[in-house]
Amino acid sequence: MYRTVAAGLVLTAIAVLAPLSPGHSDGAPAPAPLPTAEVAQLPSGPPDRKQQPIPQPHIATSALERADSQMASSQVLKAFLEGVPYKIKNQGPWTREGSMTPIGLVREITLAEPIDTDMARWPVIVWKSAENTYQRYDYNAQYSNVTSAVIYLDNDLGVVSIAPGDGATVREGPGNSWIRSLPKGEGE
Image 1 (spheres, rainbow, N blue to C red):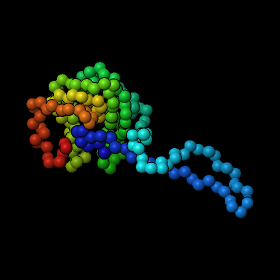
Image 2 (cartoon, one colour; image 1 turned 30 degrees about the horizontal axis):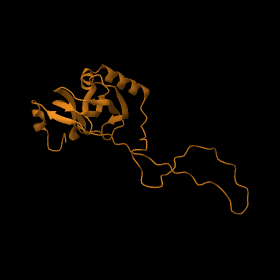
Image 3 (cartoon, rainbow, N blue to C red; image 1 turned 30 degrees about the vertical axis):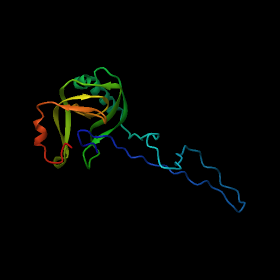
Image 4 (cartoon, helix red, strand yellow; image 1 turned 180 degrees about the horizontal axis):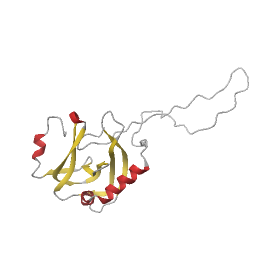
């Protein structure tokens, strides 16, 4: 689940096993061949996770269009990206525990070039386990060497969190006293 400020996306790959081909050793005619279908070949050694595509969950076209519109109209995301193009690396529905109803969509983006942001109040979220929901905060920080980010999109509110990916440097500014008020274990 996507629950922390700097969460990454974790998707589970499902292996497809090829059926055994029919045949008879007693000389009897083989049954009519089954229709052919593409079947994934199992690797002979340990999986190379960098080479294997990550299966994407089905997302309704309307949800994708809404997310595209929310990202395009977000002033805070425009300020974060500073005009640098990006590609969507992964995306998936964002739901509450025990629910199939999406809060929105989570997108992991890869930037065309590294960016350094200004010191600003960036949106972040902290998952509130007891309430099975999130709380949005403004995090005063400057990010440098950002090459990827995770964007949380609420269906109703748009961009609610921008979390720089691994390798980014974070310089925290003043005014983040809300962090000290978090219960132990939240926001980590």
